[in-house]
Length: 304
Image 1: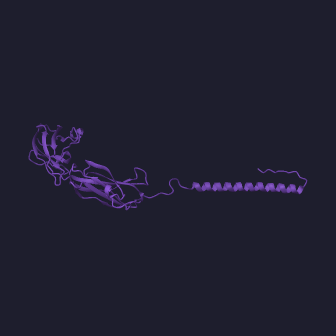
Image 2: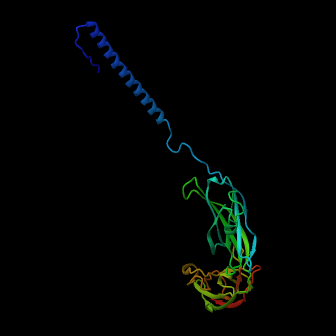
Image 3: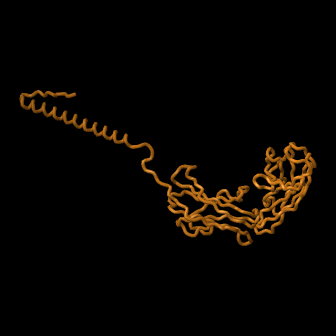
């Protein structure tokens, strides 16, 4: 809207001049408002063209150059510590590096997380030089640990992505461990098995295994089976040494208590199998390098 202001004066020309000036001033204000509105609309349209999400992103650019770990290790009175390291390029995108240590078959985890640091702290984590991209750590392999093959798994957590997407397994190494102790063979005893069964009848048998180096030194307990004609039974996978279990899985293999040294199996002879005397041979194997075998227990089962 436009408003006119009339100022009474005796000079008509002054009146006209004042009137015109007010009109021009008001028109200038209107023009400024229109320009401001156009600039606002332009800015709004421009902002609407910006895509949703992150405009600028960082890339996870680290790269594994090398992994250092022993292939064999023997604990003795002066040395029980293993040092391992991972060399990485573009480490600025890395938040943390660590490793886990477990038996190669996954049955025992000795260390779920050993932090690897690029700190230059040689004494505490075995790192030679700070900020050189080599992340190092130490862990102890006790003489109480089982002999055998161990596995080190290496993990990197980046500082770009969110958890758990920022965690990546970057490598695996294996090493043969000797606990430095005299290796004794395991011993089998206390076989519990029926003397006869009918075909199609499910039955359970158990045997006790001990090892002077500890139950954790037992790698496996198994049996071989011979048909009445003396033929060794070999399954479709070529296996002739059938495992027994100490896992507490009563439903699947009849074992009552995990880790008590009593190994169990559930078995039945189908109707297609011959009747007669079937021979079982039981043995155990330890984790030594080379491994040692237990005594052999032989039993004859009559299948009706």
